[in-house]
Length: 486
Image (cartoon, rainbow, N blue to C red; front, top):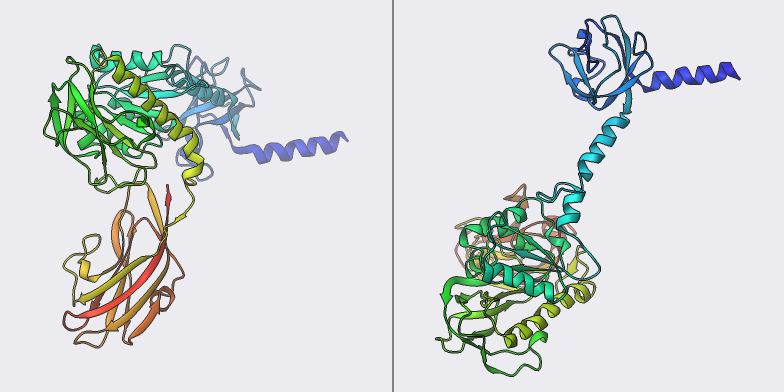
């Protein structure tokens, strides 16, 4: 019984041992290092694999002790140990083993690093920092983005907006663009509000809010135009006292009368010169020209005119009334209903609009009809000639595509005798031609006939056609594709 146990123990030790050696010189007197020059470029154990393994001392004053290795110097064979090291100096001639197990001390230290301390509240790198800055209670949680949290917040644009939302019962996290660009989990919030204090220089750090998994309200004209593409051109701050509600179809405007609504004489209004192509105008300056927009909406699923274009999963809004110190009670009541609408959109619409990361079929099919196919492309996709483009699924920030089917009826080669179909996809960020097939018979071809593929999966998919002679080749047909959010 005992012999079998001993054999099992020896087999276990052999299995766990990555290296067995003898120190060649004294380590530090405090027991924090040991040195074995035979470890330099050792074929039995890679230098990069030594850190975070366990070192077991077999002889000497520290016999039986084990510590985690935190560093290895391949130039001299020196191993640095976790924390205070061993209880005694590891002298030359000490037998030791490097074990294939992670040190408990190192694991605990890594865990402690990730947890942090209760006072952490700055960079969100630890769990305590996230708990202190992103508390997610049962009620709604709002991210308020201001220009700079390192200085005093703007009283009218930042503090008043924050305090008003707190009074409404929301949990509010205040962050600045640097936080958003770094390690802030923007998808953790019920909705996002961008303060009017944000400037055009903040746009680069806020660009990823375009793909945030939450409804978004922007009070800054500069950011709406440059980072979020709610507007086709930014405006400026105005001093109008009224807006006109010109579209009351959104839920948050139901039962609100059309017509002029006084905000207050002191409330500065930020304007947009023009809205994005797919945006809906909700309100504009009642005393303005009708082109300086103060409230617009980019609906879920509409592209934002950016490059690359992005269709948001939730509605995005621009609200030009940024001054919540001077905005009157009527306006605040209307906006309170609007915030509740944003919350409901997130919490009750998420599961019913679509499954977020499964492929969704685009119905109906996409039809095409080309009657002037010529002999060459003046530019490769995504800028290929419209006269030669059959399938045109451009790259978008967080979408991937599947081309499900393609039917092409080749009706004319023009003055030539054949038509060449070319398949392009996005590979490592570049548009690449991956197949080119010559068709020399008129009639109907499908995806399998042309490229031998049942489906095409890629982040961008294009199919172009050219003829061998002339400029009057013709084909028509239809294709079906699906898209999924990444």
